[in-house]
Image 1 (cartoon, rainbow, N blue to C red):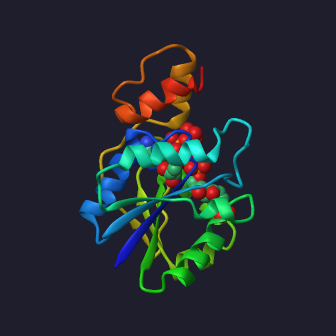
Image 2 (cartoon, rainbow, N blue to C red):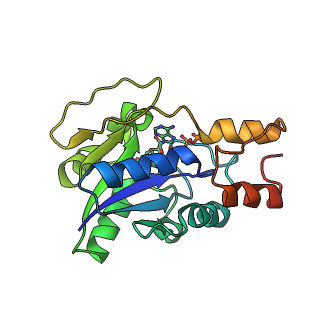
Length: 188
Ligand SMILES: Nc1ncnc2c1ncn2[C@@H]1O[C@H](COP(=O)(O)OP(=O)(O)OP(=O)(O)O)[C@@H](O)[C@H]1O
Ligand SMILES: O=C(O)c1ccc[n+]([C@@H]2O[C@H](COP(=O)([O-])O)[C@@H](O)[C@H]2O)c1
């Protein structure tokens, strides 16, 4: 079985993430997509992040009922910051029956060569890349698959700023995630 690992801060998860996961599962050879919540991206500042348990909960709420999607908290139990190669290695040892691929947005491809052991990630696993507005890097490598799909100009940053400014985020988030954010008064 082929599993696409979709790593992210998911601060919070938004419909862009869900569209990406669905396109990847539906239009490629991936059987499932696992959303791996990263407590701490090595390249991002931690202070703006919600607690990882809340980010995981929102992912669970967002994917409820989709049996091809799973939420994964493996990085909560690993050293911080979260280096993707370490998690890939761990997951491959734990689930030798699965063929793991990495799903990333085009913005992450720009700096991918700076990731820890990026060559090993490419050689052993491979990337499925979803295009992102403003990012036009065409990484030419046999293990990099550029998936053609509609551009989505939505980011978690835009959602956080919108909530802070008192603007509506309806339809940018799954309703259960919007309710969770409102209930907990996040980003206000
Ligand atoms: N609109 C989008 N188009 C393509 N890829 C995206 C989009 N939004 C997120 N991604 C990808 O999803 C993964 C997880 O992203 P992340 O959780 O950081 O979301 P984000 O919206 O980019 O967040 P932030 O605005 O806080 O940086 C990354 O690989 C990122 O490139
Ligand atoms: O392993 C690395 O060196 C590395 C460097 C930068 C980012 N990543 C991972 O890429 C994923 C996407 O990050 P983000 O914050 O854009 O959602 C997240 O899981 C990060 O831990 C990983």
